[in-house]
Image 1 (tube, helix red, strand yellow):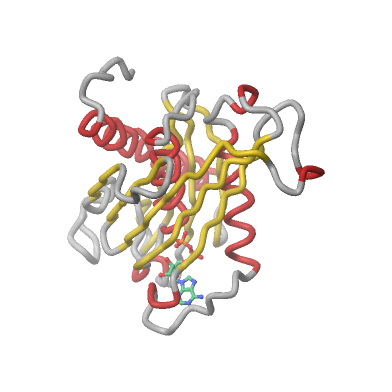
Image 2 (cartoon, helix red, strand yellow; image 1 turned 90 degrees about the vertical axis):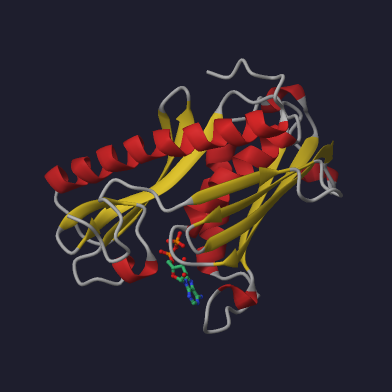
Length: 232
Ligand code: ADP
């Protein structure tokens, strides 16, 4: 069974990653994922201002997911809405799990993911790119967050839905972020209605997909840092 874009049901769209593209940032990542394009940057750790927002035990992550106005065909309002804020909040929680924040008390780490072109799965692409930008910034990482969407479209359980698939009549769309190599789910969001049995199937497709994303993330890190080859 192939799909609207001729992929296999468990096949990712083509993914292309490059680290260190934004020279003014401490770390950055450019990521193409099918027709999605994301740039992620990291600035910090730096002293938290205003100081009352600081945590004396660890760094605070300030993650912002944003879609550029030109990222979709009908102009996206640049003012962050509820969707942008919710995605930013829960993705920030996922990134917190990946970084050894206790090393940097009273600081903030600004992480920005900007979607330049959107075709569904952008929160997963943004989180995948953000975790690579953190690694590129040299932050002490416990692991990488590998994120992907899985779900149901046209009666099939599929990995990495496109916008066309998300718009099908029976669509279920789940974004999953997995801390790798620990294999710990750190993000899960779902759109649609599904029974428990199908839900388990969708999660299993997503977790396997995240492992594929992780392999591509490791490859991208090794391309820029060929001597640091002891990643699991
Ligand atoms: P994700 O991109 O993580 O799958 P959604 O399921 O909310 O997030 O959105 C699916 C797709 O719908 C987006 O990738 C984008 O192509 C489109 N989209 C989302 N928000 C808007 C918007 N405000 N205007 C136009 N298209 C949008």
